[in-house]
Length: 191
Image 1 (cartoon, rainbow, N blue to C red):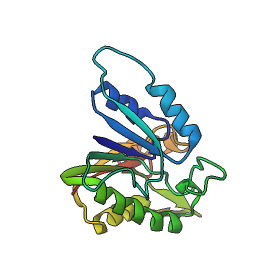
Image 2 (image 1 turned 120 degrees about the vertical axis):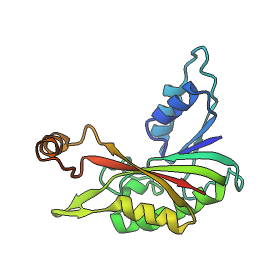
Image 3 (image 1 turned 90 degrees about the horizontal axis):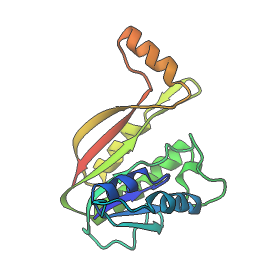
């Protein structure tokens, strides 16, 4: 069974279904959950993965017993960079960076609890800038997951698309052979 917290738009749920993987999508936002239901409501021959959609909080996965999950894929919000709701108290996208990182400790702890031994947890995270300074949230989150007990197996750099500054950063990174903030990190941890 695959677990996908912060299910959002449901793309990972669709891919799991197409790959014949059973997956649980979890989100605190009813609008996101409805979008997930709509996207995964299809029948295609050989797409037999079962999709379970639950309203829930990644900090409290009480529906999942200890060591019951085979793989975790998660793409948390990047603190309050993009707010995914206006008034859902459990929505981590409403939190400033410091508070967001504190709450991610609970997400990491719950992820560790529900994941089977020797299995993998993949976390996609990006960074931000505030007042002209780089805030390396991704590496803070990496440390939080390590502190929860995970071991970093792999670090993958993914080009970020559709960002307001992507064109500028991409053009200059090609021109001058460097990368700035036009990427995200995919941390692959092993329990």
